[in-house]
Image (tube, rainbow, N blue to C red; front, side, top):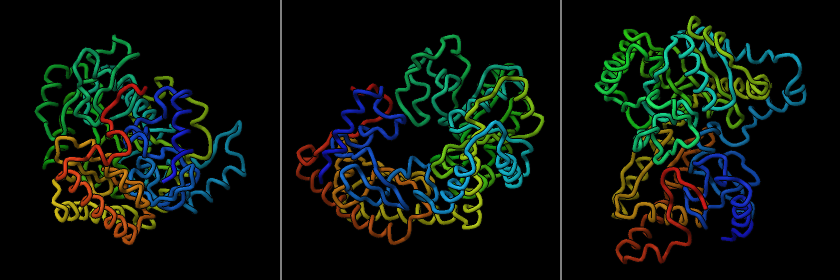
Length: 438
């Protein structure tokens, strides 16, 4: 494959952009430096074209989960083009934000009011600010990954790696005020005793309990009922982070499937099918506390985000997109397992079906991941050990992909047996966690 332009652009990025990209999950070293194309010229449906004109079927991260319908969806894009042609912003407010609020409250009868931002990290920061304003308290008990903001990274102040079990290793809290130490306290999913211990020690100053509804596992019976009970008894605001899970399995969010009863829920990521949008929805009395604090931004009033979200949610509900994503993800997970067995490889498979992942059971898993990425690129697939399902994915796409996976797995098994993994690699081993890029 010719990647001359793609690799040259990566060198330019290193010189001009600290950290190379705006999102850790899109850095080429997270895949395989030297073979991952990193930049695109065009994306449509499930296809992506890189700077050198190579065309791929994308069975990887789907815009890191943002493009839930598929790239450049005709219906969403048509609505956005119309909004742009009629003015994407002005001195007045767009009525679409009211229509979107009505739709959110229709989908979530427990919610009364809505505020907006343009990305998940902002949305979660707003939710935490509202909770602190409402309760007059400081401490946040949390489970899961919730973004880059100070309130969250404060968990790593003065600790070894408190966030290490919450998706990303090595998150250095450099630049986070040291005065925030002790204000964000982690507990693990389904480990209710850890939350109980936090509340026993800090319950009088607990502003919020923040959780993802799911990432890799289903909740144990009664787990979220107990979380709700602990929030009530401590006076904390119960916040559900639907940034990653939202719209994957249904239109309203995973918390509805699990009968979770939050005070606030935050949506972003896939909400605008690639257009920036975030929504913070919640119970009226709690959401009104947003007016106690200064929460305001010019770009939260533009028209494209709400328009894209409306079009995405309406199509998502009409087409029952969640059901399709589950079907595609289930095919992928079962296919990975079958391909590995056929090749004699040991892998672990996990994640909810629409956000699947696998790992190589080997002493050099990141080398094998890099080799897998390389072998899949050579067969015309953007692929990693992650697969985010899109509505544009079809069973035929999955079948083609799994044929390529089986071929790649067989070569990897052969490389293991002949002990020449690194000799076959054209790029660097995949990186793990957060680290400075040279």
